[in-house]
Image (cartoon, rainbow, N blue to C red; front, top):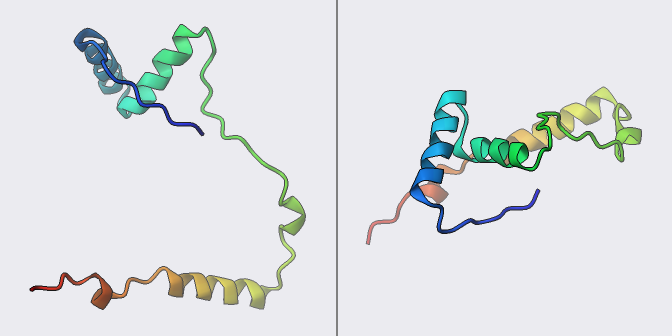
Length: 89
């Protein structure tokens, strides 16, 4: 999904965006997207886009292969505390 930076938003527009975010209990980004959808006359949907290009791979692993993959991922997701300690000079 593309990202756009908008500069120079007038205070009254910013206030409206923040008010919408607070009322709907969503992020400012989601509130702004909602306002943009309304102003474009396009209904907003929260539906996720589903892709099917990898469906043929689904369910082809044996139980042992899936467990080995999960174990490898768990190892990769661990944090090496020594690497993250701040070195004092």
